[in-house]
Image 1: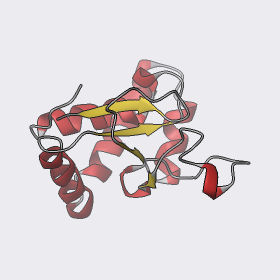
Image 2: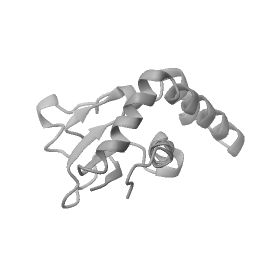
Image 3: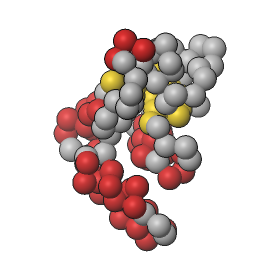
Image 4: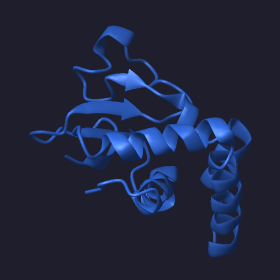
Length: 128
């Protein structure tokens, strides 16, 4: 059992399990009924997405210092009790279920999903 970190909209791999969209907004121009069939996500879970303000910091980051500022702010958001409990739940579930979490960003290293990967691993998740 494992949690995979994926780019939403990419082809699914065999055994990926349920795909969870940890994004602030649904994909534009896609009917809600087609989110899953078009490989976006099966469940929308914006609770683990950066706030709009923080998301803008990440999107506008042009250097390592700006990315570090985004990372710090996002980690602070994820340390709030509700988000922390959700991360703990996903970490525990990764030992008994296959599922994936993701975002739209092309490059994982410049996406909040890279930070989610680390936060889940810190909590003992089985991360691929």
